[in-house]
Amino acid sequence: MPIGRFSKSCRLTIKALRHYDETGLLKPAFIDPQSGYRYYQQHQARTAVLIGMLRSLDISIARIKNLLISNGNDLQAMLDDEQQRALQKVQKQQQILDSIKRIAREGELTPYDIQIRKEPSYIVAQLSCVSSLDRLLEDGASQIYALYDILQSHNRDFVDPVMCINEDPDENEGVNIRACIGIDSPYPDITPANIVDVPGGNVAFLTHKGSYNELGIAYHSLFAWIQEHGYQQRDAMREIYKNDPAETAEHDLVTEVILPIE
Image (cartoon, rainbow, N blue to C red; front, side, top):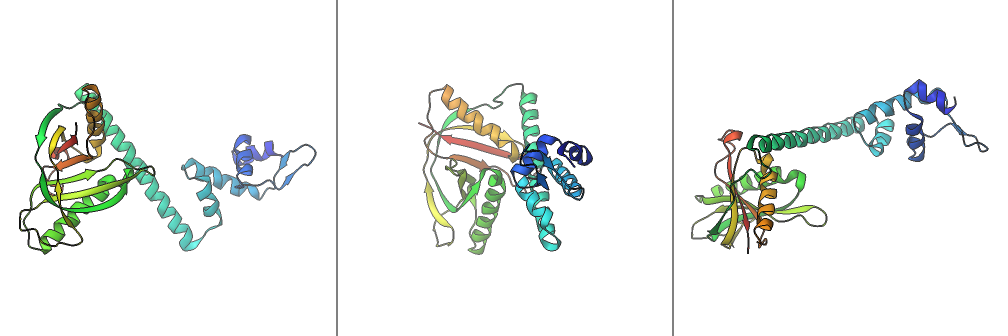
């Protein structure tokens, strides 16, 4: 079949079929060396229809190549990965929607009261890991709860603050997270955690009430505020958690977002 008739039979555009040829996803059965016209065989229509279906699910061409030749456990594993990818995308879109709703509800683009204070220094137990922007919340929470377990195993009480210090992303968008929980002396060896001194100093801060998923607005609000008022960032952003998400409804969560400035 010439490409035009094949296009109609499998409900794909000629442009798409040319693209799938160029990427090696679906090669024509024959290309006329004189005219360059592409021709397909009838049995290729099933593959073309499946490609169209998978592309409609926003599955990448590279992944489709593997799906078309896979079966059994390999197929199931790849489909599981695609389910997780789609779920993360839905969650991200929900975060965006919730953030837009917050801005609309407050009626301004930076919906926070931002102030300056002198932050004290803290002696904390600390666990660190490298995360990514899309896993920041999950990895930060995991580190905090792991730190709780370590302190409990050493029969140590917790004191304020409970916080994460999130470094700026590196060139590969990796984010170093330092999960911290305050601790009183004496300071024991609690490997793999460390006992560190978090320095104090002037900070710009705001109070965020609600889902951690909307903290991105708080970050941008602080960065915009310090630019407007002539300050510079001195150290990494901090999030101090005022209540426990395991015991508090999401809309009642309170987080202080703190940016050290000079």
